[in-house]
Image (cartoon, rainbow, N blue to C red; front, side):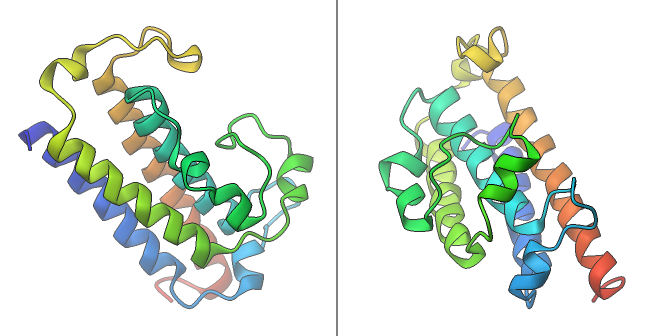
Length: 172
């Protein structure tokens, strides 16, 4: 694997590890808690983080169906919404109800494994400079998409850790 991709893979793996720690021991009530009615819950953010990585790596970079569709995760989780969450209204988010986080983490693990395999065995140097022709990312490059992935994961992991701290106290 190229050093640049090792750095990206290391970053997303570290996010995933820290996400697991942040979720450890949280009850269903804590996972679905919102500090205000117009805020996102931890369970929704975990689902969103997984969907973002799946879409950025599989749909945008590889021009493939997302693992979400390919492996029937929507049906397995009872979620009919097919997007990644960007642009959802609060009513749409609330209509999803409680999200089964352990099952979402199974889905997320499958994405992490597929992404690591993509970095190790599929992506080429010239893919990083290739201009993307996806509706939402027109004109971006493969490298810019990977930067976006790191930014998204860091942003939402921080939000999850903050919500955990609000509920349980610092470092608990």
